[in-house]
Amino acid sequence: MTDPFSPRPAAGVVRLAPLAGETTMSFVNRLAARYNVTVTGLLAAMAGPGVRGVWGKDCLLGEVFLAPAVRHRVASLCQVPESHLSRALPSWDGGADTNANGEQPNVRFASGSAVPTVMLGCRLCTAARTGAPCSARLYAELRSRICIKHQCWSLDSLALDRVTLVEGQVGLAGLPEVIRAHQRLLPLLRRSGSCKNAFAVAQAVVASWWDVHWRDEVLWPARLGRLGADLPEGEVAVLARDVVTYPEAVAVTTVLCDRLWRQRVLEDTHGQMPHTLAEVPRLLTELARRLGRPWLVELLAASSAGALFAWVRACVRRERGAVPEEDVWAVPVAHRPRGLAAQVRELRLQHVGSVPVGGRLSRAEQAYQVGLAHARSYAARHGHLAVPKYGRHEGFALGAWLANQRIGVAALPIERAQALHRIDPWWNGPWPISWRRTYHRALVRVRKHGPVDATAGFPGTSLALGEWLHEQCSRYDALHVGQQRLLADLGIRPAHARSAHPRRKSLAQAFAAGLDHARAFAAVHGHLATSKSTRQGGFPLGQWLMSQRSRARVAEKETERSRALSAIDPWWNPPWRVSWNHSYHQAHAHHTAGHAFPGTTTKTSFHSVSRR
Image (cartoon, rainbow, N blue to C red; front, side):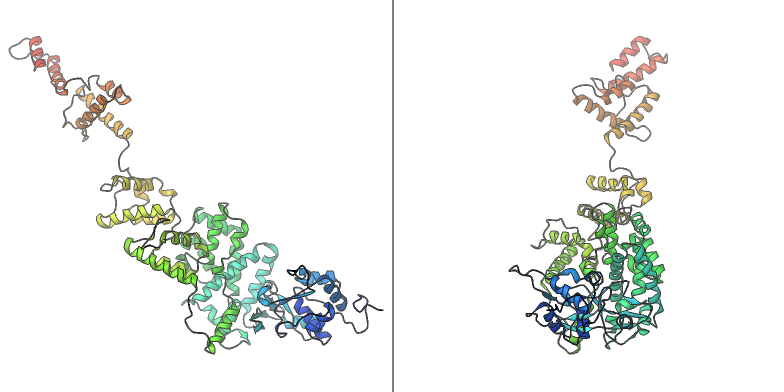
């Protein structure tokens, strides 16, 4: 008996070649159409009884996985070697999963949401390859998204709840810039291994700009008006997003792929974690230049969230060795472009009035709103959000809540980051919270008494605050650019930091300065028998020497300081009153000059003065 699944040609058997990147479901559907049977009927003949229908046979956006024996029979039926089918069909070798009881089904279906994105292949190219006016569904690939020959863009096949929402192609005859952008991207895809990942980041960046609806944006509305697409009215602005923004996505991709620009990002940030995109001015300027939007620099500079901000932070973290290379191209879930299928479904439900304008908040959103309310209350009372990690406010663990927001700031939705930014622009400064708390104490003092005077040693400040301010000046160049900006509000700028004096001199410096004045006094007078009010060059030498004598008497033995003063005057600290030394040196100077005391001899006069 002849085996009907033999690979040898048989009467009535047709040869059907697959398309590169085609889904197995699409190939089986075309094969079933050639034999004028349903997909379910064809697979039942290949796999035996028990194959159920494809949950809505009109929806072919899912995938079918075949057991090895079934794959062998299908290859025999279409007269194509299995090796060729394996190369052309990405999911051909996927096989069927094993059930819980250990048995492996011959056929398993997967819905469209459980498989990678599928798109409709170019109809004219499919007809030319197959020789029949049929459609094929391919896994969405960046290089095959646009058919340059026939000037068309393949939309993603959108499906929800096993129902096909949108599927089709967009004509690009009126959008030559989209074709040119694709032609620039193709060589980059061949040369750079990271180009595909960079495009995913760029697409997320551009999609976030699309949602903003900037007032100065005129290119996208004009391009949308020139779009030749047979799409449902009211859904064009949603479905055409990726088409209209494609040239900008390619331009951003070329920048992100370039290692030179990654290096410039590190140079601009000095290897420090950025607080806003204003800290990478060269990157913003280059993006604005390539996109032909000079106004974009100012709008992006204040951004502290989003896909581009997350990419910049990931570049810095990669340079520090904190994350692997693949994390540089990871787009946080909150910043990924919103699914078109969900948007289309929402529009259609709103059109029929099935969806209320304001839905109920999720639990996560409700928890966030509670934390945000406590953050506003705390900032209204204290003027900042520099809450210690374990700090509580009105019974709420605000410190831990803010710490969690800071840890995940790169993945924080833009609207949440903006809400916290409006409360405190420095809520997520890339420096310790303790720094901001001390800074705020200095700011409160400045608002009451005016800017601090760094060149005078921060007079009027407390000892601890003055020493903290001097420490910031001493390492000013190593501070984050945001910290330098904050210090400017206190009156400390680069010139002030370079000429700053400490809040108090160190004991060694103070003693060296007093010793210099003591030498100068002794050079003129020959001794250090000063009175309490004696000053030398404006320096209170008398008071300083009194302090040194007191310390020397307390010390049990001679110190380095007492020896230094003894080298100037051996009797600088006599065991009697210093006033006696002072009178003695006056009398000694009188006697040395050869003057006789009135009514006495020179010797008598000297001793009488000494007794006095």
